[in-house]
Image (cartoon, helix red, strand yellow):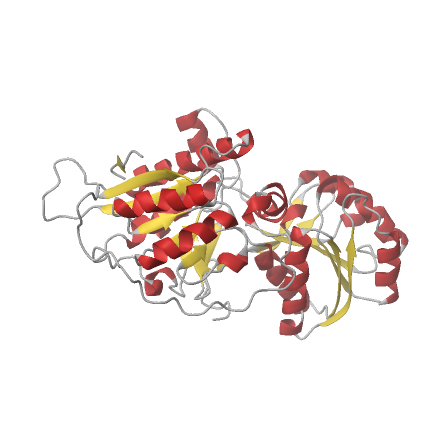
Length: 423
């Protein structure tokens, strides 16, 4: 564990604003990759949304001042306290792809540290490994070194192992898992959650006059997230759930499901699938008059894939995703510094470190309070605005994009403030 003490703008909003719109396809990652490919980030058995977690208990052994063994910056005055930020990632995981992802996420964290302009921040890394006990040992080391906030881990079992140890010391955890069941009680999920996409697209469709909703959802963990969010959000917009059908993504057979949905006569159909399988499904839907000529097709972030532009039945559909932009400054800067393209999810660690830098001006050991982290005004990150709620979930501002014959267009821009987005 090597602390990084670097000079880096010390507020998240001004710093990240320059890069805010750079990566348009991370929402798709949130849906398919972060939940399916990174299966450890979530739990397949999550069939219904968990109840709100209870209020966090008071820490039994809170960090309130300097203790022996806490890491310090060279030549720092004895009465000064650095801002110690711990980051836990699966650097030695058994999967080469996961190790590469962890290295890329650490690179992005270092970028944010340099960009923050704060010479007092120490970024101290620890290895999540394969999760569970290894993650618990990692957090024990970080706490012994005096970290005031923990960024990571990536996988939900690791978050479960880390959370009680951090809570006992009064240290919040900004985790990267998509499993909402591990949020709360001092754990905040800075991840791309498909629930945000469903909320945005259903709300926009309702604002355009659609009220009778159906959904076609895969039978997997990602589909469970989508189905729960669909059931929760349609009533919020005074809509009716005409039908919700599940299908096996291994076979892609939706013939019976499409016929059942067609019989329910919806005026909007959410299809929570992307890529080649979505292109294969679309003609079946069109055959049953479930194309955009008859029913408004809606999608999640996994639609943010240029390959679907080759399927005529999808033209005219809408989906929710981060605001697209031609400014790819984050990717370009990452490539310039590290000589490669950033792996997926790297913006999460960049935004997490930038958030820590933003809040670091507070009183030592009282900087990262629940009140500060759940500021209802939210924060501006690389892919748009985000904010945490009291349950540890992350709400994001998303755009609605339309599928055209030649590309995607912005149908409804992403919000730049939470002022008019609920409470």
